Length: 561
Image 1 (tube, rainbow, N blue to C red):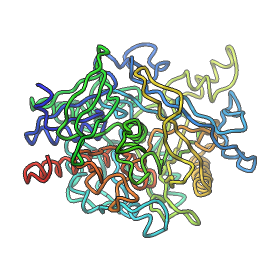
Image 2 (tube, rainbow, N blue to C red):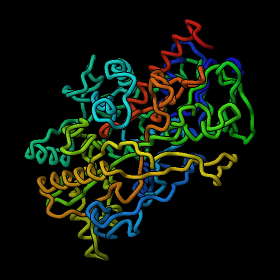
Image 3 (tube, rainbow, N blue to C red):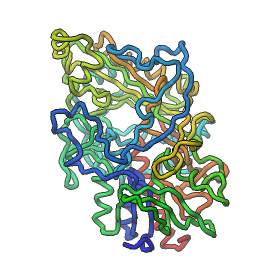
């Protein structure tokens, strides 16, 4: 299809880009999706059937890992030594005096499907009260929409993905039930649930983008426990096998992998005119756009906007508010692991199959602003095979070590927590002044600073995780890690926040730039607040569906073209 024939060009094929592409193409619009990373074939690229499965993480392919610069992080304080990461084999994981990146720091997949390719698959709705943080607590910013506005779009996304969830919904009221029943809980998770009940905490099935029954031509989950390594069966609801698959089936959507957009070019009358890009063969080209959606994530979207500065936008495209790249909110997390005296076959079953929402409300932790959640975490901690037991939590060597390993396997019990991150002036994204990618574009530079509220929250999360494990029968902890001494962010938000006032927000309530009438953003960069530990993919999808409907309505009414 010639470039001039596309009604919408979308940059990024993750949760937001895929959901928007599906909604627009199924409503008759012609859509082009440009993705910097490669396409993955679940049947060929994921290696869970091989004997070396445990030694391999999610498979890296050319261009599947973006490059970022991380600015020097904060100095660690001895008074918070109980928040340092450690394990029985290596001792303290970060022996340095500063917070350090863990691996890449920002855990992201570039590819058709984005980070949903290796995500656990939690499918959470934002807590309604977490959408009014400025009004209620004087922090972050209020969402310009409320939960009731977003609820119908949550339901649409859940139906397409095939979310399996419980009948009880708590504060997140629903207009329709989950499309599929919840998954059964494995024995280790049941043990954690018994401990939670003893402590007066709730423990319910976690809403999951993994099929508990065959659905939409995809098989039910086989409970291999390795969602983070890529799902070869397609039962996990990554967007490549859900939104993208259905968008392509319309015949109105085209996806071009390994195509990097390097610049957005503006024209007169407040409209984006064209984009510059480099295709799979390395050829540089320009393409006119009628409507442009950015869905590159909370690091790459502000990078592209800042890199597109011109004479009319010297601080970066859409940055009249000076908020592009600001208000970065990252993952605040903690995991504690210990060994039981008897095996509960904790490596079996579905990752993160149960969750505790008791402290998820932004006012539910005494003396702290912002909530958190707790969930079973053995699989996400990687304790699903003997190698990680041997390298991290079962010390020794030789024959005795092998015997200890056989005895310990299946006894590990992990509980994790994720909490709210409040924006602060020292946590943001800008362009590194020197480092560039293969196409000559300056790299994004991530600055991160944990505030006092984040440290208080981490202390509460660590204390509660330890308490639950000890109540479950763990005599001695074997490993703990968290984000006090490591930058390890799978969820990032807020760098192009939405809002009513153009002076303090980058986009409006529909994700449209306050200045550029045909420029939209559909990713977690628009979040005004991070929520109390909710996984963001479902909210990204719901927001993208709403933005797509706004584009469709505007086209019908000729509001802007």
